Image (cartoon, rainbow, N blue to C red):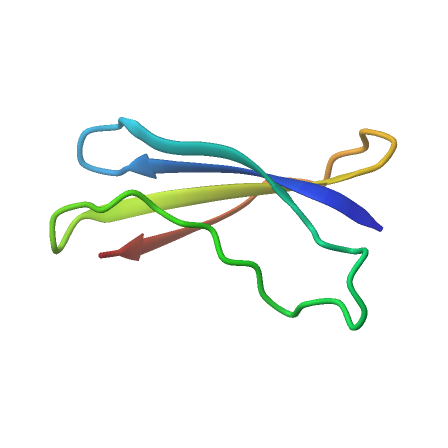
Length: 72
C-alpha cells in the first residue's frame, strides 16, 4: 500500500527544479481516488518539463522512479 509519492518536476530547458513535494496517496479514502492533483507552478506557454515520481510505502520502501515529460 502506497503511503505517499515523492514528486520532482524540472524545467527541461533550464534544468531548474520547479517543484519538489511529498504527495499523500489518500489511501484512507474509500473508494480510493484514481488520480491525485499536483499543482505545478505557472510557467510560460510551450515550456517543457520532466516529472519524476517515486511511490513510498509506510515502511519507507521506495519504488523505481517513474518519469514523464509534458508541456504547458
